[in-house]
Length: 359
Image 1 (cartoon, rainbow, N blue to C red):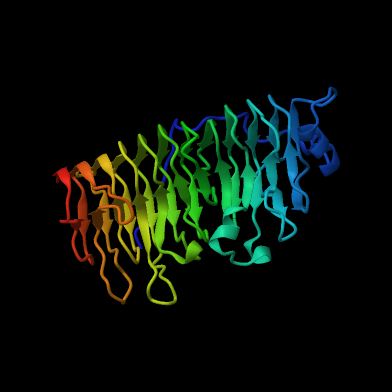
Image 2: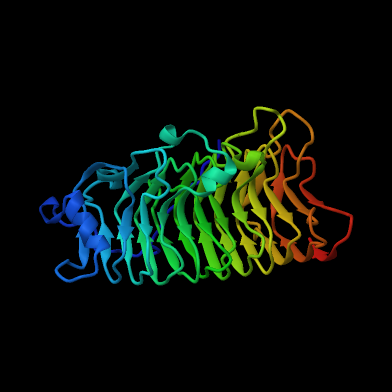
């Protein structure tokens, strides 16, 4: 199995190193008050005691201009926020507009074993960290694991920055709607999530140096799909230098499959992304327009996809028209991409109507 080591030199933002001494930390009652009440007397840093905290009522975030953090010395798992009841839809949620909030040094454990595998519509309502439609907030050095739905949700006219969890970080699904913008997801590991790892329509966003492994495992909505999905309505999203391993996942019924990238929208730039071991396509683009896909001939490959034993067979890179709306794929440039081994075609372009495709 081909692996790529992710190195970050000078690319991460430091937020003061390890958290303060546990002597400076708060118990859960004081922590809830610190993040949840705007009247005076609370510090600007709300630091929670280390431990595995079973959350049975969501942590309500109401204050702006604060730092919300766990106690971290060696591992973010030292301060774990774990879903304690199956019906808890959010572990932490901004229940009113908040600005200039930094959240760091936590492990959010969605506890999928407690909820079981949820059908798509139910899973959509689970958002372990939900920050809502407000702006200039930062999530850094936080791990999201075992999310039954979305690990972190970005919605509204909101700027969220996910910096460098690093090679040991793990994150659940991130969702960004088309009304959000400037979402940056850099240097994270997404692994073994039931839904796709990232679903994003937020314009002017940047997704880079992430590792995706074995996501879209539970086939939510009963449908095939990608580990990284650029949703309909998205535009001007840059996706570069990501590594996607499908872990040979396929539906038990022999019908469903996973892809590396599933892309919709327009004016996107894809560069130097590697995709391996998907039961479906390595890279699938549906009804996209004004898109550039480059590899720069530096060993960045789409390789060994279409791994399931059942027909139909799939392609390394597939460009098709939208099946549900009258939108052709058009104005697409493909340059310097290597697509080899095990595919039906290295690059497939649907012949049923396109405009200005250069490969």
